[in-house]
Image (cartoon, rainbow, N blue to C red):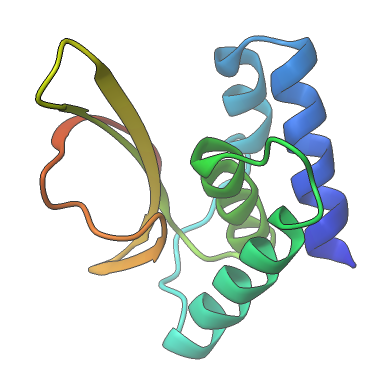
Length: 120
């Protein structure tokens, strides 16, 4: 239920406020410890499951939500944003949640150009 509440709040925040405002609220918690793989899997599962019930819960919504949930338990992570240019003129952006060497949410980083990391 906590994951559903956080995903819903982040999605609503991204609808009402700018990305920078929501990111500032989500990333304000200090977290320094590495999460163990069980915690990463639990957060990934909970956020992905909750996102199925929240309309418009994009990869960015999920990455921000996962980052917040990990930071609440003291675990460090980063929100990574990248872009991919398809065969046409369309530019696609994507967001991941990364903790240590693990991609927690967002799938494969291959085929994307890394732009920026936010968070610890």
